[in-house]
Length: 146
Image 1 (cartoon, rainbow, N blue to C red):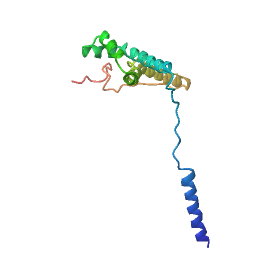
Image 2: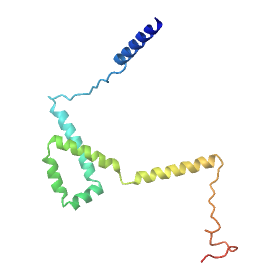
Image 3: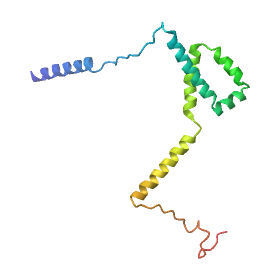
Image 4: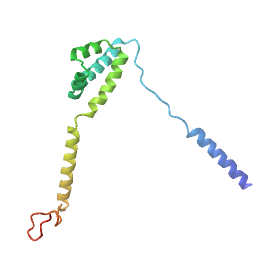
């Protein structure tokens, strides 16, 4: 009797768990109104500004020159693009702008080194760098190698 009740309870528990807890999440998003031409033009202008910022990057300018494109040709190409193409180019330009030129990475490494030194000084620790006797050519008591 208890065995059959246990199996029924287990089956009911698994069924309720599957129905109540294992469901896919609902997705929602804002939909721009189709009747508002200003909202679309603002988005296009924002995308064009993003593209212009990317075109000001030295690396991008060098690549465009390597392909034989002038800034006037690039501007005329952008003005002839569809809004979908402009948006696609703007999202690709965001990736270019996010890369940077490595200066931020250098600053991050310097800040980490400074923090480590400050932490070691606050805990009264010292960093000692000792040279082995074979690597120290200035020691007179060792015979010269070679």
